[in-house]
Amino acid sequence: MIFNPIKKLIGKAAFVSAIVFAFYSCGSGTNDTVKETTDSLASIPVPDTAKKQNVFYSIPSPIQLGQFLKRSGASYDVKVLNPLDNASKYSSTTKKALNLGVYGADLSYSAVFNQTQEIQSYLNGSKKLAEDLGISNSFSKETIKRMETNIANKDSVLQIISEIFLNSNESLKDNDQSGISGLVITGGFIEGLYVGTRVAKTVKKNEGIITRIAELKGSLNNLITILSLEKQDADIADLINDLKSIKEIYDEMVVTESKAVAKADTTKKTMTIGGSAHYSLSKEQLERITAKAESIRTKIIKP
Image (cartoon, rainbow, N blue to C red):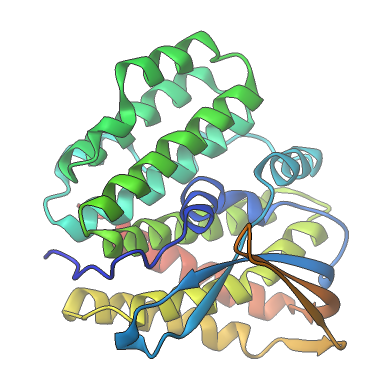
């Protein structure tokens, strides 16, 4: 199945943050009540067929959130990654795109913990899927060489990973395949949520991880919007329903918001919203989100 594209639907920042750094949004901190004072959002223009609706996608800081994750005391667990053997088993465009997002998140997870062997392995797995999707130019020999040269430098590796997936997004847009980016984002998002909920089980002081999981509510809503704007077949409709099943749990959270003030930057095409929001995610709600994320993730990575 080939996803019907919407030209230039996904912005650069949204693509990179979702694929490469969806996992980082599941970092850790202090408790299960979220307080946000400023959100930086990137505007995603939607075509006339969608009545020029604007969708906003949260852009987390990969370095900051990656460091935040390590400070939580979490240990690297290779068992949470999608097995590399699966890369050659995906046959449909949908599966390849979804799992490019999954491998992108796994690649980043490995990079945060300086796991050089997994970095190289998941880079190759991502390259395989990218080649199948026609965007192998993003994994040039020069880029791979840079990765090998800087493999011990976490910040450099994360920067290179960002560039790889940014270039992949540009290739998809140039070939009128921006819709595939939505699938890659979905794969990265689900993998990030899955890993985050797994990490929450292994860290004693996991309140901050729960905080980050709660904060994903807005990104999930935007992701559903992005997918819903596309022409749907049975696979995509099923995927949207799966995401909505998680949304239903998020919608049960108690949310208290203060008045927000929005400031637009037309040069950078971003909008900063100042204000505060408090989200309370109960233990029971977290358990249900954890179960849903694992179930959906299992469907995505199954060849």
